[in-house]
Length: 226
Image 1: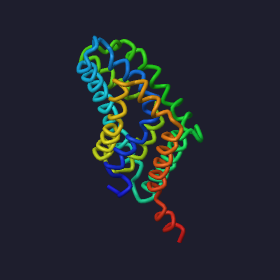
Image 2: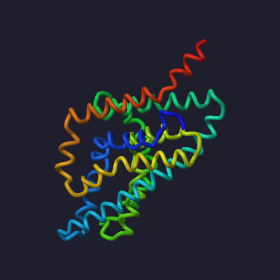
Image 3: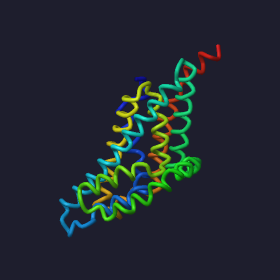
Image 4: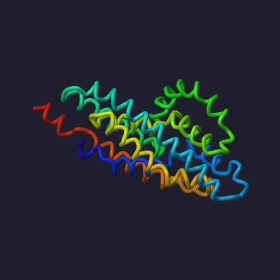
């Protein structure tokens, strides 16, 4: 695995992308957190944890699938350079999106909406997620919600070279999103207010842009230029 494709980087992408995750999934996480908890924080925390474990499992599955595709497409040095270039550019676009400087990722989420149109009714039938199986199942379905951050990270992970490495990278990314998402499930309004602050979003966006630049195979470009 290259230096730009590390599990710690994947965790950081999840942490930094929390400003976007709270907006995309915060509402459903909050709903699960209070669903049928009858004021029992422990019950709400358990349901929120189950929902998020299901969500991370869906990221892992998506990582395995994209890893298989990436392995096929990246055959040879040129294919790997192209894949890394696309991944880096998409991460830069995601950073601009998180910082709210350029909404370029919107088109990617609209494309994913075609799949979500078929999954939305299933997600609706799983509410209220008031039992462990329902919370897990809702997370598994909700993990396929159109999300530019997830799509960007998936393409980044696809350059890992194998399906299992891509799957583990997406697992690490999902783990990075857990602190914000679990907290959102219990303290929805407070966390959402913090994450939507302009300074927080811009700082996170800048760091994601930095990861994107770091992912770009600049040395390979220079080598091809000679």
